[in-house]
Each structure stands twice: as structure tokens, then as C-alpha cells.
Image (cartoon, rainbow over all chains, first blue to last red; front, side, top):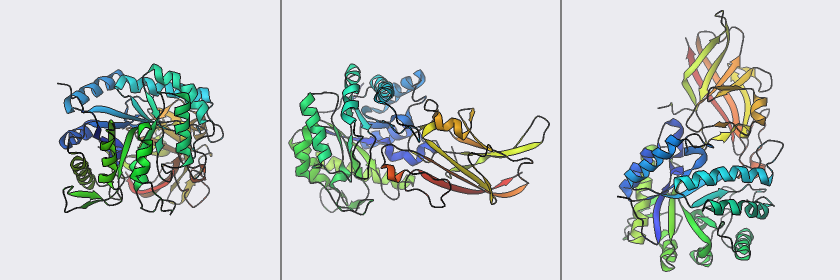
Length: 290
Length: 146
């Protein structure tokens, strides 16, 4: 029987969490087994890493995918892909070329059952500002995205914050165009007061999140350090205030997937990864009540 | 099942011409990234064996990906062919006579260009001893040749 997910914020896993192990022979099925154990039914794949035959998906992969999703009650939550605009050391892709690459992803995503796409745009500086022509690119790609019923979501990730100009510009674009093909993915790392790779400490609050929630279609439930907790949650994330963040989502009855992304220092140790994933799902389950 | 190390022990061997003369050697690497890449996104650096250096544009190095052999120059222009995450790449080096029986310290410099990272962080310079801040790698392994 096909698994039907409930409305509201839902738990999932990005197989990005298992990145260290794929080039050593780890498989999607290995991930799906553990996800089913944890009741984390939504999956994010990274297309360029996990689709056999990419960028031309094989028929065998599509069949395998459908069988695995059914067997392990997994729902396609988010399709991760990239706009590799700096394709050559000395030359960039034109907008038309970018759209050609995007259309291949849209087709595969649609065939695999994904609606949300984490579309990673090229950046131009250390503040991660997107390519200057992002509006033209999204405008050119939107009709194609609509044809395949997918929505492109740039990821809002530290050092970018939720109140930053870039996010406001994305929102203004969505409001102005009324597009259904563009939205936001929020990485929960934005709520972390941990010093970033550039040494800066800056973070957003759950209230900041509340203001942009209608534009958010999928979330990366980032975690780096699970610690025991004596309260009803059993575990906490040391840096991200999960109960407060998930309360905001519940309060507004936000409907979508939170896919777990583990970036702990010990993520290259498979046993440590399994433990961390389980603790994190226990925390989210205890926040949501399901 | 693969070696956890990036440079794979299986696949390290001399290569021979039809007359049976050793003309070089090769070894395999697995990806250390979380996605496969178009070949033009790869930066090919030098191979060093026991302090002997083979530079990327010397004509000595080729990479074999999905059964097809490429020079670094061909890879730099190729935005169609793709190195899948699930496959190893073979690095082939021309060296008349091949490598002698015994231990060898093999190292490889390479990287990838990621448009989603700040351009300042994705500089690749094979001539610089210092690695770039992102997508610039140096792997070494000591292995025996039979």
C-alpha cells in the first residue's frame, strides 16, 4: 500500500548526510532502510550524485527508484541540483545553456515524483550573492519548470540570514511575478549561533522565519551536534533551537518536508552517523508529536 | 565495496605495450565529493611518484572515466561527459620502463570548480604548494608494485 504523508511539517532525510559513503559503495536502499526505521518518510537526493546515468537517467534507475520508494514507504521530498554556470575555467554558460541543463533536471525530477527542487545558483562573492542575472535565468526557466510541475528553490544558507537583502529580493520577485515556479529552501543552520566558517557569529530567529514562511517550500534540517536532554525531547541540537523553530512551523500549519542534513565532525564515521540521525529524528518527532 | 582511502590500492599497476614493454603505470581514485561532475568542472593537477613529478600539461597524464581516455586539455573543454559519483577514475601516467618492483609513494593533485562557492575560494593552482580553500585536493598513498 502506498504511504500517504500527513499534512503539516514532516520528517525526512537528505541522503547528502550519507555523502562520505556513496563513493565507497553505499546505496540508496541502505539509506531507505534506516529512514523507514526512523519513520522519516521524505527523501532528498542529489541528482548529480545519486541518479544512475545522470544527466541521462536510465530506465533501470527509474524502475529501481519506484520499487524502493514503495517498499520502504519513501516519498520524494526534494531533488537537489545545481546551475554550474562557471562550467569552464575561462567561460560561463549562457542563460539558454543553463536552461538546457535545467530542463534535463526538471524532466528527471518530474519522472521520479519530485515537486520541490533545491536549485543551487552560482554565487559571485563571499557573501554568497547569486549571479547578477538570476532574475533573467529564473524567468527563462519558469515556463519549463511549470511544464514539469516543479518549483525551483534556492537554499538560504549561512552566512546568508533570513532578513538579508538577497532574501527580500527573492520574495519581491515572487510577489511581483506571481510565479509558482520559484520559492525558498531554508537551511536550519541560519538559526545557529555557532561561529561560521568565516569566523562570524550571526544568526536568524524563529520570528524572522515566521515572516517568510509562506515562501518556504522545503527545509534542510541541518544539525551538527546532538546532545542529551533531560526533558521531553530526549535530545537537543546544541546550536539550532529545534523546539522553537518547529513550533513556528506547527503554529502556521506549514505543509512540507524537513530533510535532515548532518554535518557533524564525525560524519565520516558510519556508526556515529547512524546515532546522530536517530537522535535528531527523536528530537524532531518529540517536537512534532509524530 | 571500495577502499576508504581516496587512492584505491586495487588498480595500481604498470601498463605495457603489445610487445610487453612497460610504458607507464596507472592507479584509481574514488570521488571525495558528494556529486558527480561534468569533466570541465574537474581541475587536473600533477602526479608525483617517489619525488618524480608528472605535470598535467606535459602529455604524460590521461584520465580514464567510464572506459574513455581523456587528456587534461580534453577534459577542460568537455561539458557533456560526466564522472559519476559511483565510479572510480583511472589516472594513467606515461613513464618508459614503468615503476620498479617494491614500494612507491604515489600522490595526486586535483580538484573541482563549484559555482555555488565564492570564486575566491575555488582557485586551483597546481604550481602552488598551498591548497586552495575549497575543491583543491592532494592525496598520497604508499603502495607495492609486483
